[in-house]
Amino acid sequence: MSDKKLFSSPATLNPPLGNLSAEKFLRDHWQKKPLLIRHAFPNFEAPLTIPEILTLAKREEAESRLIMRRDEIKIHGKNSGKHTDWQMQQGPFKTKDFRAAADSVWTLLIQDTQHFSHEAHQLLQRFNFIPYARIDDLMVSYAVKGGGVGPHFDSYDVFLLQGHGQRRWQISAQQDLRLQAERPLKILSHFKAEEEWLLNPGDMLYLPPGCAHHGVAETDDCVTWSIGFRAPSQQEITMGFLDYLRDEIKLDGQYQDDDLQMTSRPGEIGADMLLRVSKMLDEIRAAAADKKRLQQFLGRHFTEPKSHVYFDAPEKILSLRAFTKAAAAQGLMLDLQTRLLYDELSVFLNGEQLCNADSRNASWQTLADGRALSAVQFKAASPAAQALMYEAYCSGYIHLA
Ligand code: SIN
Ligand code: CO
Image (cartoon, rainbow, N blue to C red; front, side, top):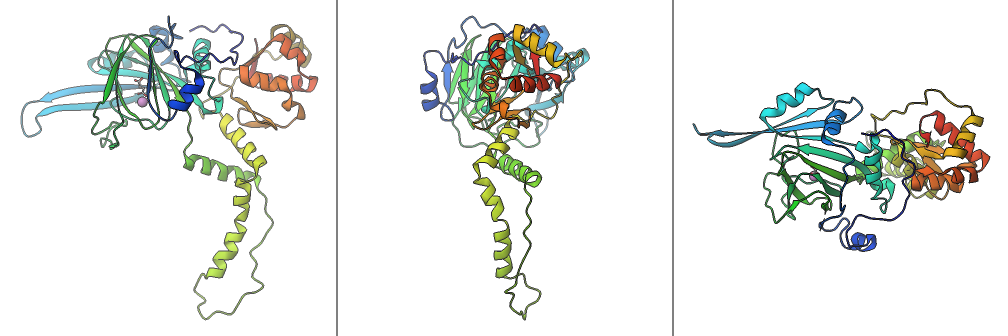
């Protein structure tokens, strides 16, 4: 894993879709139907080697899981037949954990590899024909022959890119999505493969949400890279918006009933009371229709780092002057974990809205799209925008390139 600072990951459109244009892919396949792309990455160069994947799985900050499958044939009694035992262990791992898994058919999964490797980050950047707000992570799976996570479906879109070795993918448009009970991972009870392909390094399979799939490693060195997307559930968005409103909204109205009529049923919550309360809640409806509020909520929500993400301030923080001089010579790059998005009004950085008017400066948008600023682009930024970049540098969100 290299820690060299690769300069820019420009937001150029060079989608790895074979002969298909991004427009055609989005029109005909995205969220609709699977697509196999042979040689999507001709001469694919893996961001991490197998020893680097194993080393990453030992790190505390990496979210890793080991899935172990043990098949047993019982030939006695009424339970005779094939029994499959699935186990899942969370990382970080020690060498002895891998040794202990050796009697099983195992798969190691690591999420968010783009946080740890510039090369992984650059691979994810190849999918920037889709908005960053929709992109989740680059997961890697490393499996021994026969390994896999069982037949299942995901609720988000995914590109499955074969990195090393071979994997056989089977897919199905089946409607029966019932899951096996009491398993540590989601496994379909009745998977009926309808199509299958053997993927070689550089081949890639796109699957829309809900498409049943089953990947089985055909070699002992099977590495698959999954480009996963974020599709927040309505529940998540609604809860997020209500949380946002709880912090933002200040209302001074009061329950009022100056036209109250006498009652012979004092125990009743009457229709008039419901109506009054419904009116009091009108502010929620109004807030959801208020573009500025929605923009603020979405910007913060989509840039909020995952809960296990931490940023380190630079060991030796430069003064604003020294930083400006260095950035004007070297340029800037976002930290691999940073989420930076913008809309027509503002810029959102790791869950915060940048309120300074100069955050609207085009240089912030260039930084968000390309995740880096060249020296020339930095020099073109206004002094106030540069000062804001300095603050982000002090928090560890931005680095000198
Ligand atoms: C894997 O790569 O083993 C699992 C990826 C997936 O099925 O989503
Ligand atoms: Co899947």
